[in-house]
Image (cartoon, rainbow, N blue to C red; front, side, top):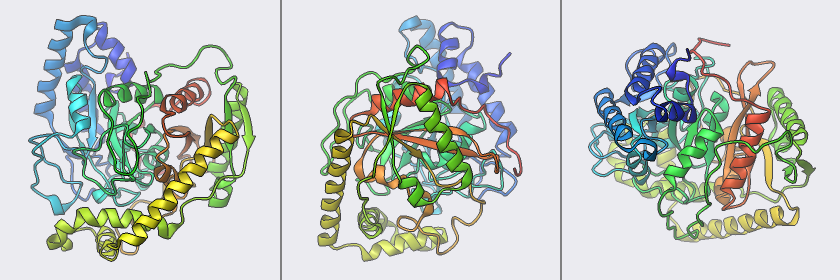
Length: 483
């Protein structure tokens, strides 16, 4: 019999609906898996030989929520929400009223949230079960989350900043998690840890109650082992109004999110997939280049028309830094009295934001951002492209341990974000899925499918078709010390 901890969201939801599994039993299996694979109780700094995906666990609260979910299913029957009773981990940026919220930082030690984030309110409304808060790269200001190990090799980083969520999913601790993404922080850990995620159109999931990094670049999003499971989570997370932003209009409701592939051997017939020279210019590890080639072949075999076109210009590094650091500085100035409590690289990032207070360069960078976004939207329309396919990250998981050292760049100069940051600048939705394991490294390689704002359901459907028909996600992996 399959261990319930290995079930995906939709698999578990089906068993819960049929009363073949209870929420209490599912939670118990996940908690047992956490006990077996986390490497002991959660710690702040982690240990080289442990996974340490969690910032905090809430066993008593989760047990009470699981019992309540079972009661709701008994009372409502088939009318109970799809996600009722499904355990989830929240990145330690998402507020839950009455619980600690620390952004994996000593700066916020002892802080307790007064109000719940909009995202958690929506998941709580459908009776999901909160297993705990997962570690983030401190204040989401980096791409490695070094206090967490990568289950595929504990001496490698899981990616960041949503590294705890990715590691918990990859190790089979929970079937669902939330992360956030400012320059790639959903897609980077998904790629390096072998899980799936969707960065929705900017604002589609409200950021209220989420500790910010740079609000005009920040995106909230779901993570799971499959894109179909992400679709189920998106339906709950978007069941309400979208974010109202001073920079971008609220996105139109995208309609029902797909949770299954289209029928037939050629589900991508009539779909145009584009590739560009962006990956080549960024510089790919051989394993990543191989997986990209295999994915191009796979989408063509599934019926897609594949074209290669030159890409529009991107925002320059200094322009990206102007937006990122100006907005980050607004939040972090309140913590100047605790500057010594930041980890070294994050302290450098925060202190650098002191120099970004002028209105003129910020407005100029935002204007250039708008022009680049319009150019990308015109590019998709002109070439009649349904989705752009590229690697999520240029390489596989790097060695763990240096991400918090001095002189580790966040923003311009961070090699992790060479391909991902473009889609935060434009606010475009991206579906990210595992493309396979590298032949040389044995480590996961991630792929991304991007499309213009509002095309969330389209890019998710293409991703589900590709994943279900050609690139199945890896099963949960027991942590191992190295590859």
